Length: 183
Image (cartoon, rainbow, N blue to C red; front, top):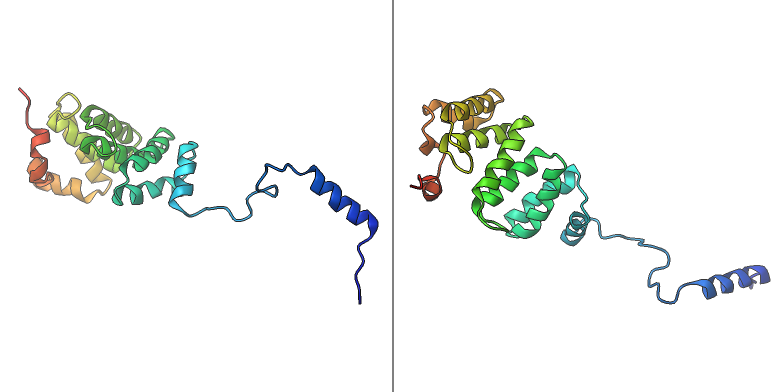
C-alpha cells in the first residue's frame, strides 16, 4: 500500500523549510535541556537565578573546591535573602576562598543572617562580636547572640555556653592566628 502526501501538505512543508533561519541550529528549541549538570547550574547562577535547590548546590561546589563558582551562586542567593547562603558567604570571606580574605565582609554576612533569625548566623555573629573579628568587640552582645542560637537549639552554641563562653572550645587551633589581637 502506498501512502500519498496531499499536495497542500507537501506545499506547507516546503514553505516552512524555506522560511526557517539557516543559521538557527535548533529551530525547535531545546528539546532535552541540560538541567542537572554543574554547567547548567553555573549558567543559571550567572543569569542571577536563585531558588532553594539551586542555592543548596553551592555547598557541593565549595566542597568540591570550586569556590569561585560557589561564591557566585551563594552571593546571588544571599542577596535574595537566603540566610544559609549568607553564612556560606561569611565562611568563604573568612577563609579567602574564591576571593580575598575579608573579615569585615564575613562579619557583615553573619550579622545579616543573625538579624533575619538564622541560628548559625546568630552564633557566628556572636563569636565575631566576642572576638572583635571584622566588627567592633562587644562581648556582652556577642554572648546574647550565642544564647539566642542556643535557645534556637544550635548544639555548638549550647557547647560554648557549657564551656563558660571559652572560645577555644569552638575554635580550631589552626585558626587562632585570625583571632589574635592586632596591636
